[in-house]
Length: 236
Image (cartoon, rainbow, N blue to C red):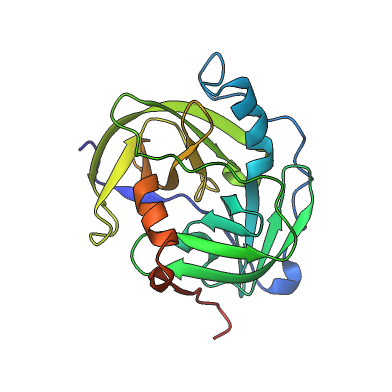
């Protein structure tokens, strides 16, 4: 399947120490960036409006490192993102589309897939519906996240195939989309035309295709409390 070189899409900066960490980016505007390379979003008007409220920007403050990723709510106090977005942190900082800060109270990472859940103290603006079934080849999808730790971006594409997970052999089958992602897109929700979550972005190939944990895997793991353990931190 195309290039076998696959990389995670977390945005990272190495720093000399926590005291030198830069400030959070400016609050995200209430509008979203238009889809990349398309005339308009494949989402319905209601779905397009909802993406502003469902997605969050995650800042992983580590011990001498800083990285950014994306995530989305699954209920009023629970976020889904990638394992590599939250791992090895000293602190997780979460911001909503309107610049509101949300405190993380706990983070857990999946034992198999590159997935994580984050519990928040304050309620999240909106939780989308999880789709009943995985998308298939040719289905239109939309990726919603914060590439490069910047503005909320909506990017359209299609499902172009599936293959065994090239990064983690234990995960099983993952989806591939031509919707473009960038560093910081890790943990972005992948939506169908009605705004339902059909997967979670976790990596991209060297040739530009994006790899997605399918919603069937996400739902199975959310329903199994033994599938997650406390996220590792950089402090011990």
